Image: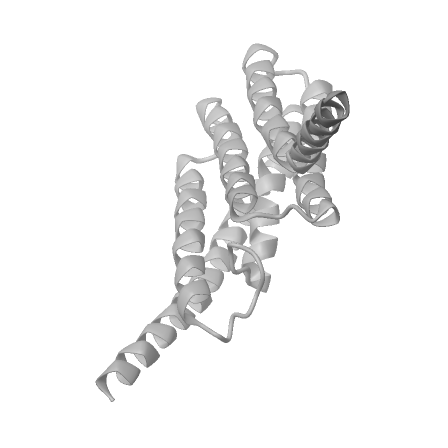
Length: 210
């Protein structure tokens, strides 16, 4: 009887340990959300100080890099994890843009560009994953080359604007040109993805008719 209880206890411990390990990537993703809140509260209360925001932003970048890597290493990737990662990115980016828009550092219209791109990315990914054999990729989302690097700039621009605004106005004044360039790459990426979706949907309609 005692041996049975010991075995059951060991099994429960093993299950709990495995569950904890598999939850590490999502914990790292959630840490990004917490760090983002801390970052924006600090900027609001200490607008002219840049060292702490830079360090926190580095940690945010690090969590964004590590969560997916660790999930793949542990073999615990999931659609929930991918969605949580993407929406955490949106939360972090949007919150920082809102803060900088409040201080007049970044224009409000670019925040709408980001929200549009994220919405388009989610919708087109769903269509392409569901209906297209061409986009044979793993994971919840379908990435394109231009869109992937555009998203990187979504992350880099706000902290770059914040630093340059406080340290070097000559560089800060060039940010608007970078925003216009990123808007153009966003339009190119969206056009490519939407065109692929339209092509896929047309093929489905033609196959149904024939």
